[in-house]
Amino acid sequence: MAEDARIKQFKQMAEADPDNELGHLSLGKAYLDSGRADAAIQPLTRALELNGRLSKAYQLLGEALDRAGGHDKAVEVLTRGVTAADEQGDLMPRDAMMKMLRDWGAPVPVLKSAASEVVKSAAAGASVAPGFQCSRCGSPAGHLEKPPFKGALGKTIFDHVCRSCWREWIPMGTKVINELGLVLSSQAGQQAYDQYMIEFLQLEER
Image (cartoon, rainbow, N blue to C red; front, side):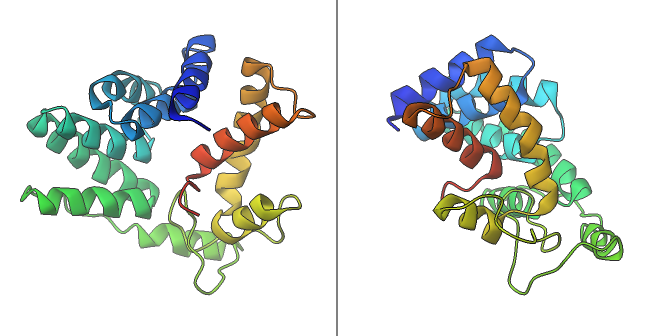
């Protein structure tokens, strides 16, 4: 999907439901991917206003602020982001933000025991597959029992997404369909739906 088309779709979703954090997060990321850091700041800020637990939004907002010349503000956002991500056990965005802070020579917050979340998941019966790490939250626990649907994307989700993050996507996917009026029986509708799902589950590089 062309970058301009992605921006248009995500902008449509954010405008259709101003309280949908996924729309703002996806729009901000699309702007950032297209090299428009200034434009990315507002939707990413809005995403965090709606949901202060969006670890990926902290990471992307920090990147956007730094690229736009707001380095000090970027350090502040990433510092808050590391703490928020660590408290939730979102290991991948947490570690990415810690690396940026270290690369900039900025202090890194003292971490709480994010690993305790993995212990809780295991104690609750969540499966732990050797070598598995969720692409969205970074957890090594909660591997899906089988692909959620057939095809290459279903296999990718099975290999890289935990049960908890997949459950979070299901109601969000319904919102995407309703707000954009997607017809999944059409190729264009299915492609748009899949793109939102890939963005939400952070499978872009898979």
